[in-house]
Amino acid sequence: MLSKSLLKATIKQNFMVFIIIVAVLMVYLPIIITMYDPSAQDSLNKILETMPQGLIAAMGFKEIGGSLIDFIGSYFYGFLILLLPMIYSIIACNRCIASHVDKGSMAYLLSTPNNRGKIARTQALFIIISMTIMIGIGTIVGIVLSNVSFPGELDVKTFLLLNLGALLLYFAVTGIGFFASCLFNDTKSSLMVGAGLPVIFLVIQMISDVGEKTRFLKNFTMFTLFDSDKIISGESYIPQFIALIVIAMVMYGLGINIFKKRDLPL
Image (cartoon, rainbow, N blue to C red; front, side, top):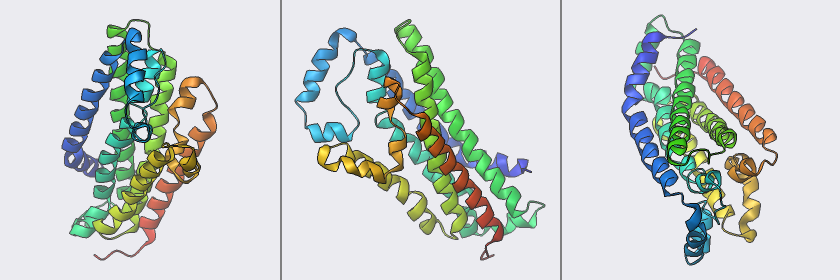
């Protein structure tokens, strides 16, 4: 089913990038949590009002509610969680298949007892597991630090749902990257689709948040399926979660099947 040797090599290849992104996340998340001060929310909102509202909205910042989960949801899950893990997903997905084909190392991999299906499944599993670990680390750190700094203040259930939504979003994002990596023979084309589409989706999401005139653009970005405001307010989010799961399953499934059947320049 899987290649243990390939999995180990892939872990080693992407380990440093993974650690760097996790480290950056673990710098921002604790800072944001420790910045929370219920007595200063009105002052903070007034400061935000003095800044360019289009830019504030595009960055996912808005008027902050009075709870810790509102604060974290705005400052961390409004924009940072959409950007930082994407950097890792773009690199890891491009390296998983397309990079091996482009560099010629895929011929070596296929000369071993590993067939195409086994290689693709191994790489897909690595991406899914590593992304789960990344979001999982953020979840644990967020809960522990919140309980230490502000005992009883964090709505743990909602916080878990926020992280589940972010994880499902990145299953879909990496699904696109994995599909592109399986579809193309060179890293340039793979990145054009695997990195280009998520970046375009993120830019569209940012523009759609600027004002009412651009609100319709939310219909053209996958990032709309992760709405931190709806999750925090308890509105319907299950259909969006299901849609993200379907996108991920389709993209990963198509990627594996295409790689198994297409001609390779070996």
